[in-house]
Image (cartoon, rainbow over all chains, first blue to last red; front, side):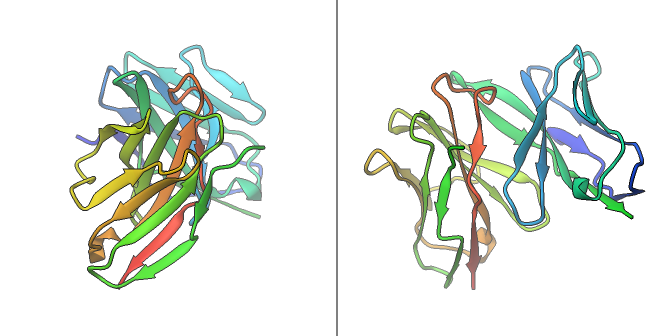
Length: 112
Length: 116
């Protein structure tokens, strides 16, 4: 079983649409959870952390369900500039620090 | 905003040659990492480095790979004898004084390695 599993997409949506991405992780000892954004041939960039209580940053809302080992990202009012690959990331503590474990990503294409 | 700097941005090398990928982490960071991403695949952890030694390495990081922090600012990844399957984007990352991904994990813009 993959450590972090995501639907690869692509999700093709019109501007202004609401789109949701899901992610599951296999290691129940995972400690921290993130969504990263990656543009084509660029480095991953942190979009937001994910907390059990849910958290919102402008048009972006993230949610964590530890019992189901499930993470979600909701994007409202999609913009053309949201087109990218969204990476679900979990961390696992090992020897006093955390390494990032990436999902393969979900591609989003927003069209006019 | 502080940056992680990687050089070169693109390296082409012949199979069997040695390559050194260079990184300058953020100056007050203590934990350093290399990740790689084969085209079309996920980002994979290679190695972490703290206090001048390897903290953890993945199965990918075999005897052909080594890391070094030679002068207190540069952090290098060496591949001793490159193979075709080493072709990938290599990302350096660092994070902050307290360590852990919660504390300012920053990626460099990557080095694209092409082995021919």
